[in-house]
Structure formats: C-alpha cells, structure tokens
Image (tube, rainbow, N blue to C red):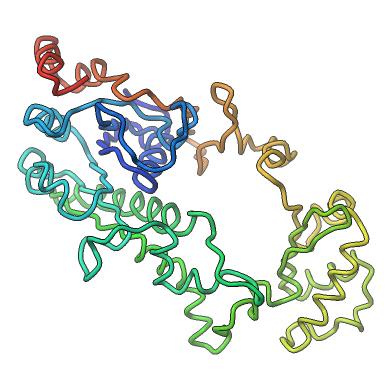
Length: 384
C-alpha cells in the first residue's frame, strides 16, 4: 500500500514492541512508508494498557500481520516479507531476534540490502546491555536526568520524551534512513544500533559544551536553561496557571521589562547569576498580579519569547495550533498531526491503528503470497 508523503515506496517491517520502535514506525508510516507491524497472535504484556487500539497512537499509519514467531512457518512468513522490505525495525533485548531465527544474518540471506534497525536502552554491546530498563534509567547515565529539575528538588523525569522518543525513536529513524541511502549506493544493508543512552547523550552535546567552557554548573537549577535564570523560567499567574518566559537575548529581555512594567534599573544585571534569585522573586511577584490569559493578551506574539503553559485539553484549541493543524481528530481521538511538513510531497492523513492481524490477508497478498499459501499459513496457525 503506497502512502502519501516523501517516504512513499519505502517498505518497513516492524516487529511489535513498545516505546521507541513503534514511534519510529509511526514516523515512517505518517510520511508515507508502507509499515507492516508483525503482531503477536495472543495478548502480550508490552507495557501500559491503552484499551482500544484507536488509542494506541504509536501504531497508527501502519498495517498489521499477526504471526506466531514460535513456529518455523511464522518465522518463514516474516522472512518472506523481509525479502521485499527496505527496513526492519525491532526493539527486543540483544540476541532475541537471533534466537527467533530473524537476526541480521538470516535476513540478509534473503535481502542483502536490508537495513536492520535495532533500538534498545543500553545498546547491543556493553556490560549492562542485557539488563531491563526504562527511559529514566537510560537517561540517568547520560547526565540529562541529573540536570533536569529545580534547585530545591531532586531530578525530575521528563516523561519518557528524552530516552524513548528523542534519544531512541528519532535516532533510529534518522539512522535507518541514512543507511537506506548508503545501501542504494553500495547494495549492502547494515545494522543500525540505536541505543537510547547514546541518543540521549547526543542530545546533551550543547550542554556538555557549555560545561566544558565553564558556563554550566553541576548544581541543578543554577544555570541559564534549568530555571536558574529569572529570564528563562515558568511563573505562576494570579489564577494559579503558568506562563513560560525565555527572554535570553538583551533586546528580548528589554521587551520583557517593558511589558511587565519593571524599571530596567531595578533588574539591570541580567547575566549576573548572583542577582538571579532576587530578580526571580521580583519578576514572580509581578507575574502573579495578572491571570495567565491577561499576560497572554499582553505578551503573546511579541519578542518577549513568551507562551502560556497549556494543558493537553487546551493545546489543540490554541489558534496557532488550529491554524497549522498541529492536532487532528481521527476517529474521535484528538492527537498530534504528522511532522514535519513537506512542500512538494505532503504527508497524507494518519490512519487509525489496526487490530492485531487485521491486515494479514491484504498484506500477504500485496507482498506476493498466493491465496493457497495464505490459507495454508492460517490453517497451520502461523498467521492469523
């Protein structure tokens, strides 16, 4: 099934998992790739139960084949799909796909040009590569988790955005597409080892540079980007809501003082860290004199570098998000739209996540199986 978007014509086999693998597959599918998710035939404890598949948003824009990978016929079915794929992505612990008979060597025997994308927390090698973990465990070893939080708090896990999705899914997608480009020149596939610990560390590159230059302290909440600076922080408003202010540049800082009515002489030493606590208290008192919406009326669209802090009910209703269709409604579920945007090959509309095995017949037929072969596989229990 050719989707609409810049990846139309790319074929991806995704072995079902949780977190970064499914999101990577969603990114590919949203951009037009034909993503075939290999689901288990039976329910599996793969993490948070979301109920209906239509709420499992990371599985949108894909089709599903339910295969029994404990049978040789099920494994053979996947290998037959691999023969026609550009990319395989999997997020199992190191060595699991090899034990299943779906490791890189078995796949390259069928398709030498296949890009084999692997995403794990710790990577394919290293002394704790086989240990279980989740997002915050992986970013804990990168310096990122230690750096996030206020001076009067411990480290604060940033949801699972930094490890699973930023350091995992996005680096896996980027790596796989880079490898596809190379494979089209060389004729040879390769393994893409996307470790969340590597990706999250890479996301910290600029901060490590600031630390090396002596411009970043180890003390949490004492730096320019971690709530230490009064001009880069979140402030509570009169109505108990919040606004975000990021007036780093001098001209933006001057506009902040103008919009808040603060005398510039009272907060003139913007870049003096010793003054930051005093200035934060002063600015906080001023912000608490008005509601969030009143400050939005005053500051939004200016060069203060301002935005109201919206919750997930409010965000889709913001005029800017509505104008850009940043959020869409699919089957009654409001969710983020595909990103990024393309001028000549625009993305199609994401589709609802399928039930496991919903597209088995359709996919196998399109990918070259005969009707008799499909019926035989279903009769044997290899697919559903």
